[in-house]
Image (cartoon, rainbow, N blue to C red):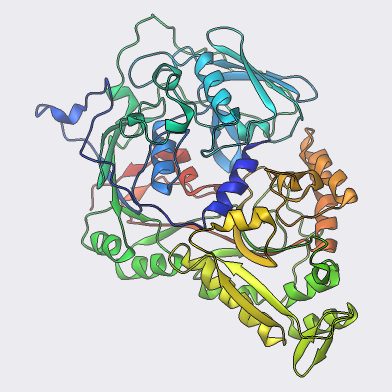
Length: 579
């Protein structure tokens, strides 16, 4: 129901190829004039970043590539946004309240909230965005994330959300970038991804896209390009505390009014391969490089006398096991724990992630407020313990190969994963896990995804034994969509087919609104059960790595749900003049 529902799907889909499609010739957004067009304007401070991939559609309702999401993060705003230490702070909304149960939320938009073409941001824009995300025909990013939320405009700047199922992390869902109804309302849902708006986006975020083509994008502060207000709107209320209910998690702080960024222009340059991106950085053409594999990023930073900014990620790299009745050999938790014990996660983190990842002892990120190390004890790689666990579960080792309890023939475990082209890191992890399992005598067959049948389709159909995937957990963990029994139904996200009534109750309790202490207690109980059941085999939470020169300053590194979240503090970045 919340953003995690979308995020899990997005995480699974990330194993597909990053599609690079030319957008076309340079274009300026409608109604937006670039100040750089005038030769009389003073030189502005320009931050240049190179990244892997190409844009397809800079539209919050259609963004699929990482480049798209980066540009959306800079050019569009949600009702709220990520703040320091994972907090939630106002963005388009000036204030909000909720009922004690967290079932109804009311947001009041800032009076000065404007689209970059000068039009006011209204409650109608919010309702339009949510209505699109809820539409059965919508298949873009965020599909299914608002299915149990209804948005109603109570006035020009007031919107109410009614939740079928209250969740403690609703404010995380409200970070969803809002789309302009006056420009997209008449676009058929099936045409959103190809509509020209994605090439000439008009947002309401801190920066506006003033130039976009297949090779680069130029963004400038919204205050310097937005059209003037036409309705005499007053500045936002500057009174003080923002009314908020105790179910808000965590307590918000006021959004700075009239903040002027130190960086007057951002240029993102797009590259198809790591070698070209690295060459441009080493030549001094870029202030930062993003999207590189961890090992490449570390090597580039060393060779170019730069530094790595390692943002702790909240995307779980894990092995999913099919727990349906059709796979009885995997339904014993002792078998699953044995398989986990056989995996040398520290070695994988060192070889595949270049040390830039955190070992996962639970589906909950270790950087999360909800993580409890006591309830989720670390499991060290131990081949002897793995073999002992299989033996206790009734497996027998004959001729150096394992066979399940009651079986006459050796067992072959089929491990599904992406191919080297679509996701080299995940493909390498699948091979490493297979090698660890083979080291204890397990026969393993690594199967790459079929180009004609995406991995997510195979998982949804339940036609797999084990699969290496990435699952985006997010800042406010909600594992209900991934593990709840009801989520095995058509369109659900419980692709492993888990059915456990006692776990369901804990999943519901953990997502329920409440005080921080109450929610931590609920998560501790949930994590204890997850550890005992070993329903998934967690591997690592990879860092999102950016290579940056020393001239990029005032950047605060903190956990991110998506690499684009690193722009949360972009307005405070500074660029020293020493390139």
